[in-house]
Length: 185
Length: 191
Image 1: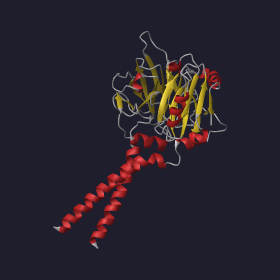
Image 2: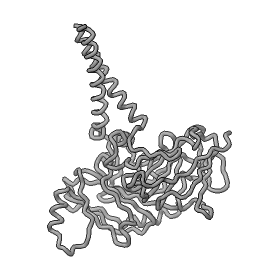
Image 3: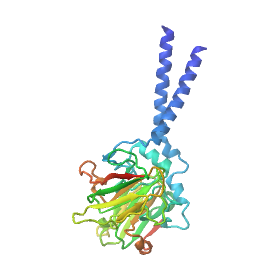
Image 4: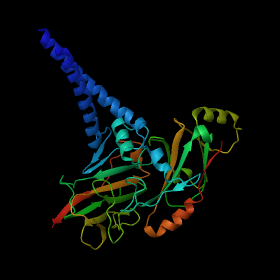
């Protein structure tokens, strides 16, 4: 009788432990990964500000499964060092989509050129506390700037611009050169 | 003595089965919030901060930053509309009505996610490039041999996958409220 109870306890314990380890592994993997998107994208960094990733070909893909019909700009930030970052400028292209990502890759904000309209892009990425402080100091008639609160200090801004046909690529790359990503701190 | 063996066994079982099943789940790309349209599978939350833990972990592992998370949505097809695996020895016709998006692209990849090289240098089509008939319908032929019309070459002998990305689409934010219109993948002759 006791032996049966003991084997039952062992089986039950083993299965419970397996479940716990399964969940822990899946939940912790993003924060334990040494090669997260922030680290990977850092390899393309040659200067401060936006980096244009090399276009994807069959031989090399700067970003796994990137759309070959896009031009991708990346600007990494670390709000502990940069204070906040400003993204500004105007790029006259058929489509761009901007997303702001936490270090492990998840996007917490996205906007595209249709939402901006004819105005130039003006955006600040800051810590939630800084957003509150910045808003309080703004005069009532201040220019509307997009204020984005980042859940983590480290992250990156990603811009994807569509290349509707290959012959348009050079012009689109040149237009994207008008976009700036600068630390303010 | 016997109970120590039992405990050691339970712990070993827990570690092996726990880690093994986590690994298999990520390899199999399980995830919640899937949207299936014919042969196309997409996850509107993939790439966003509110994606499920499996999708998030799989993406960090692969290094992919998919079009998603409010920006658009990525659909992947590994099978044709009749459920048969895509095979480069066959010819496929991908035909449909314009999907609800400002822009879309159709691209062909190896099963591992690399672009398929070809002399034409064509990896896919954009919504601007495809020819449409009067109703707006388009038709892309996916085949090894050159074809007239919109031809997407697949220079491989085996399996491949098709990826359809919708940019600036209501699908990315309102799941289930809009029925996605995605093309059919019809298999024609096989060599």
